Image (cartoon, rainbow, N blue to C red):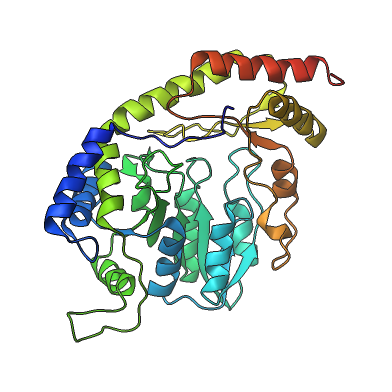
Length: 361
C-alpha cells in the first residue's frame, strides 16, 4: 500500500538520546527545557522573533482568536481544513465565507471588502498548500476597516515571500506541527506574532492564565506541549534542508511524469522560497477525478480529496462560493512523502495516464 502521506522519522537513536535526558530530569511537561530549546531553535531556523510552541494547530487558531478578543463575524475562506472554520465557531464567532482565487486557491481579496459589515472583527485566511495569500492586499483592507488578520499557515512552514518568513504577516500566524507536516512534533503547533505583548497574552492563555504559582492573569486553557513532542521536533529540525530538497525533487518528477495528463495546478509564482508540501492536481471534471481515484485505489495507492467538501457546504455553515465548489469537486492530492520512491511515482503517473486514455477500464 502506498499511503498519501507518511511522517518523516529521524534515526531512532537520536530520539532515544533525548529520552535519556527526560528520564534523568523527570520533568515531562510545563515549560520544560526541551520545549524552550525547540522554541529557540525554531525562531532561529525560521527567522522570526516571537513564537510559542502549543499542543496543536487547531488550538493555535483558537488562542489567536481569543488573544485578539474577536467577536461577531470573521471573514474567512471556504477552501481549507475544517479546523479553520470550527476554531472560529468554537470561540463564539460567525464565519462569513468569501470565494477563492481560481488560480492560487487562496481567499480572493477583491471579495473581502464587500463582505465587511459593522459586525466584522477580523479576516482569517489560509495559505493553501503553502501558497501564500495576497497578504499585502489583505492588510490594506484590514487597515482601512480596522480589522485584525490571522493566517492559518498549517501548510506553510519554511515559506518566504518579499524577503520575509510567511509567519511575519498578519497580527497572528499559526502553523501545524502534526505528524504529516514537513516539520512535525508528532502533535503540535505554533503561534507567531510581531507583537511581544500579544505573545505574552497568548503565553498566559496557553497555561491556564498562570502568572506564577498563585496568581492568574485572566482565564486560560491547557495549550502546552510536552518534552516528548519537543524532542521529536529537535530531532526532525536538522533534517529540514534534506526534507525540503527531496520534496522539491519529487514535485519536479511528478510534473515531468504527468505532462500528458489533462490537469492544471495551483499557481505558485512569485514565491521566494516554496516548501513543496503537497502535490495537488485539478482535473477537468469530477468524473475524471473519480476514475483516477478508482484506478489508484485498485492498485493500493491512496489519494486524498483535499479539501473536499468546501467548508461553506457543511451542515453548520453556508455561503455561495462557486469557485470553491468547482475546485473542491475536482482537486486531488497525490502521494508525497520523504520515502516515496521514483519507481512508485512512475507507477502512480502511469496509472493516472491509463485512466485518462481508457476511461472505461
